[in-house]
Length: 128
Length: 212
Image 1 (cartoon, each protein chain N blue to C red):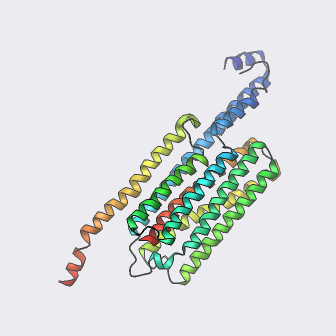
Image 2 (cartoon, rainbow over the protein chains, first blue to last red):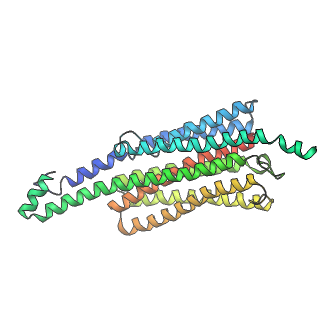
Image 3 (spheres, rainbow over the protein chains, first blue to last red):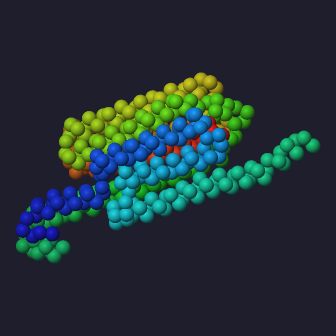
């Protein structure tokens, strides 16, 4: 730090610091918004008009759109990058994504198998 | 550090103060934003648990109404549009904040709050019409999980609105100081985070629910 002008490095330092968080630009926000509108319109259109006759295909398409839109929001609106806070925000985010994936995916997977394995027992026990 | 030591030895207090303040702001700001980010991540884990619950229970209708009968997609599309628009208006508010324009920041914040309030209004209308149809949280496990997940998101939006209101007053009184900028940055992250959760809600709960 400067020893001669104590207040001068104050401003550039703060400004530089603010920049590392990345507040985005008007262009960035508009790009993110445009992509989001498209990625929201596609799944609603697919489900409301039933364009794809195959239900699994539609499901894959809407979840694909949601995934891409989440990435778009995180990049363009939350400004997540590899540099901010020395990469700690990214590390925390990746950790969270893993835990969220295990929680949601794992729960549905386990309970689905539990249901399919347990369900046939119920009518059998009831009817005979 | 060496400069600080030298200045301290010379008894130049302002140098010391400026150095300390500078360090405090840089460190404090970054620490607050990182801390808030960690909070958002933990909030995401709460929602993960609620999504998992909903995912497990989303076909436990107990002979009650099914998503296809309950959900009105045009209403959901309207809500999605409202929340998405509120995200970009908040973004514009942040750009105004960066430029140091108090009135611009407050105007965009107000617009954001109006979109957020409209979102909440539509959601309350949806909930009340569901309950009027007899699709209450007590009706089936599916509906319990639905109201818990979507309601928790709605509560977040509600508290976000209170936060926006608070900052509107704060900025009006004290302008765009460092503290208010930091608060705005946290609120901005919170608001965009809620929009991300909503992407999961409209896809998993509404669209996938109607599709199945």
